[in-house]
Amino acid sequence: MADLDFSKIKNLYSLEQLQQAIAADPGAWRPMVLTNGCFDLIHAGHIRYLQQAKSLGRSLVVGLNSDSSVQTIKPAKPGLPPRPIVPQMQRAEVLAALKPVDAVVIFTEATATTLIETLKPEIYAKGGDYTLETLPETPAILAYGGQVSLIKIEVPASTTAIVNRILGRS
Image 1 (tube, rainbow, N blue to C red):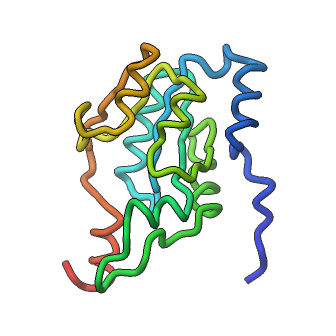
Image 2 (image 1 turned 45 degrees about the vertical axis):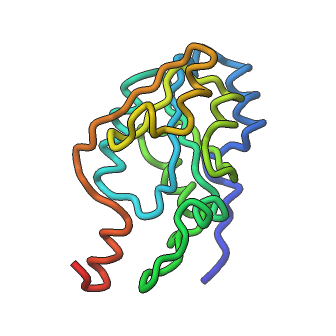
């Protein structure tokens, strides 16, 4: 398979590039919604979630867990392929092409705390399977007056469930 030229992925930024874009035109970005995740196998639950997150502000920035951070937060399970299944640049390209997504930034940490502290989004969105108490980023967003929005899960789906179905385990 030929190598893909990922330098042409529209809406994919380094954290520094994104900071510069926001500083150059804050009106195009603010109020900003930030969310994050692995987005390994995109499914309808992801799409609905991203649409709802985007509706909370002017722009939606998706922090994408790097391959190494996915491996840290989702360690290998017996009988399942190691995560992520899809490499980070391919996951980034798919996310960046989705209508609700204005920017994708890949990060290597286990949490999005550094992204939050750097970008200071007005709203940090996560799925309704979290609570303020279980969300490790809550203190960072509240520290400067941002708000957390927990989005109701409309389509219950997960990459693990999809993989199990493919493997004939469900």
